[in-house]
Length: 127
View 1 (cartoon, rainbow, N blue to C red):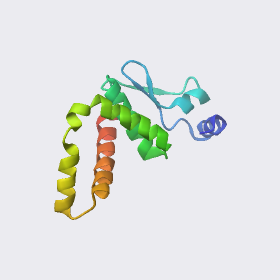
View 2: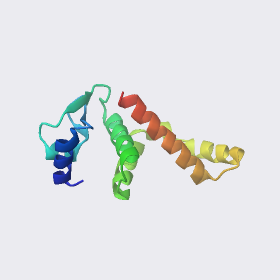
View 3: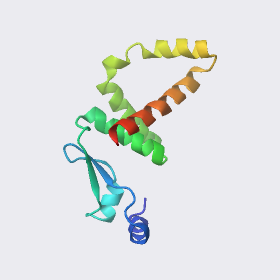
View 4: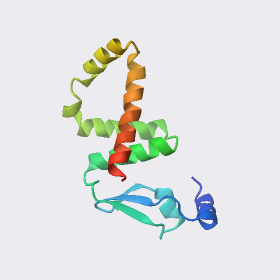
């Protein structure tokens, strides 16, 4: 986003969306807003206290609000998979079985579930 446009928008209608920070003060979402105004209002999410949570909130807030570059999605998803690899073991087989039972394609099921997960993560960490 163009910093000049953000400044103009903030001047016209105010700061509608705060900069999100994790428990440790790392910016989760709002790099451009912070560049537009160093004093942009901030919200610290105390529940976001690990790298995995930070990445999940970063992904969910950006996925739903704007078109992320494929390489940005890949970077975050790859790191999340590395962090949660033990929890992800065997999930592919379960998805294959579920897709077959539902009579839909594997990719369609994964897309639907992923959208649901993103929505749930956003709800859990940004409330």
